[in-house]
Image (cartoon, rainbow, N blue to C red; front, side, top):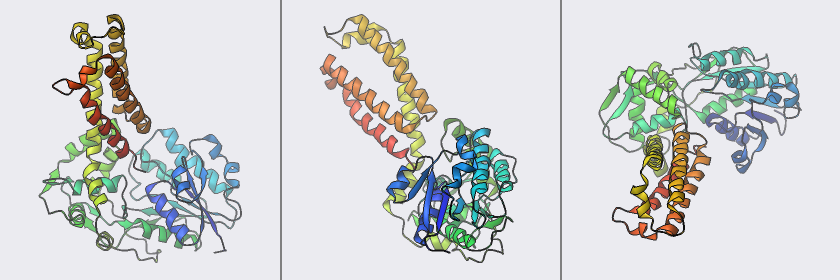
Length: 421
């Protein structure tokens, strides 16, 4: 490796991508971290490349010639679990193909693919096509279940189920097999592969210890210092139904894809060509104590969709009432000469429409960051307006405007929980 060897990491803002970026930087490489929005990577001290892989400009080799100049290595950790056909095509095939074409002849690359891509799903199909689009300069790795000291997506869901109160849920019989690998060990294998001649033969990457789904949940529960609870075997049709609801409402890892992974297990026996010896799952789970943040995260993770649904119900009910409640019901509560009854009625109807719009945006989980500020702004506007028009609403027996204060806190908490990265 030459001094100041450069490496471009596609998808560096993802769960696996960040671990790769930190590990390669720690090994002395000059890392260029790619992301669609790299602001957080900039704050972490990385040189960054801002690019949306859906942008047709990234589908041309000319786009990548500057970041991949001077024999810069490439690690492709970009990928989608769900999306449109066009998005899969862009992220898994078009943009990487252009990047491979822009590499200098002596540069090397690693594609982080996935195990179990023989299924008939968009994810599996485009992963296969992404592997087929590689060149002789690319080593293909197929990791299984990747875990780390932090968690994201599926590993966050596993922690959450392990911390479930009263019972420990598992999908189907819970006997499915997993051999997790730590993200830092995967990064070390990637670094090793960059230092040896590339091999397009896909290499399975997994840990040395195989555990069942039940054993993994009990292991995580014990790590968090929680007592064992009875195993609750969730029938597969029920789990699939939960996954379908999760897909429809965009609940992240609660999806049919996640259920399918749990049902079939994620077992990736290490390819014999890989000489690195990763740690066992028992070893790395027990290598540090669970902190308060780990337990809070595990217990709050499944509360997040419930919180969003509660806000949907609140705005939906408020919107329906604003549109349908008779004027005789609410106009007498606002004894003011500042506005006419007609104006107050119009305000109620317009507010009802705004509330319904917020409810439907939350239902689809549209831009959570934006929706947090819209909700806070609207609640504050309602509070200020009614304070001016009818200050006695603050002293109504059932709370009146007082309820807006905890509601503001609730919306703010939801906004915090929706930011996973």
